Length: 286
Image (cartoon, rainbow, N blue to C red; front, side, top):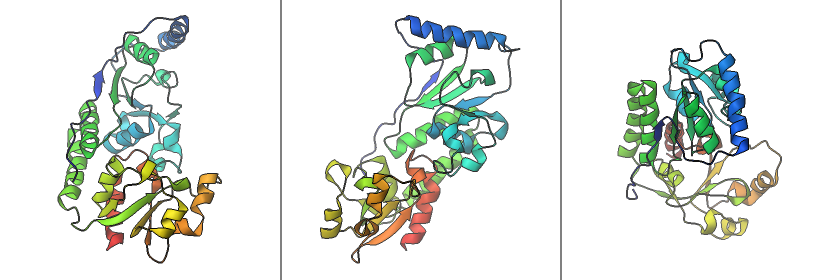
């Protein structure tokens, strides 16, 4: 395994930021504040209601929270093409990823990832909405840190420990044989040999081949095919240039390589949904 990295630190509590107060931000704040003041009991204590503004935190929320805790997930979580959890996600109201779209639901915790507009941070603080902003994970340690942070915020530490235990078990039982592999997406897109994707691949016994620019050409697939061609099926039914590229015979594998199809949706966030996919890939690689 590559050397472990220090996990990124999530930002928890009220978002705070020092920003200039331009006219636009104050108009947005005034609009949301007016909505909040019109809601009955907005300042009263309420059972924990959690809204997520990012697909990756949608997945964490759906996997860790009690059903009664979920106030809203993003519209992407309702789409079959984006996440395996779409059926469960459709039990809850959706939002467009903005604070304005969920403030009327009166959440007392908002989850997001990768930061966001500073205006939104200041507005959330003024409305008394607690926030948890996770960094995009760069390592398996980061994935576990994100699970731990969300589970703690939800009061669901046991559920978090169970998910982390499954990742740890995959790491303990990592296959000794690592097969030369190219992860393949539309247009020849691949992943870095030291990326989070490659670290998940290693847990299934696949060693991502280093590629210049993290891409591979049809000519490279013909001249030097990998032992395993790990093809993402993300949006496979979509009509696009990238998908047409994947329909080329060489992108489907040659007699010198074995093609394995993987659920491209779980590679978007590369969070705990990867556990089930790695187990499936291990079984198929035998």
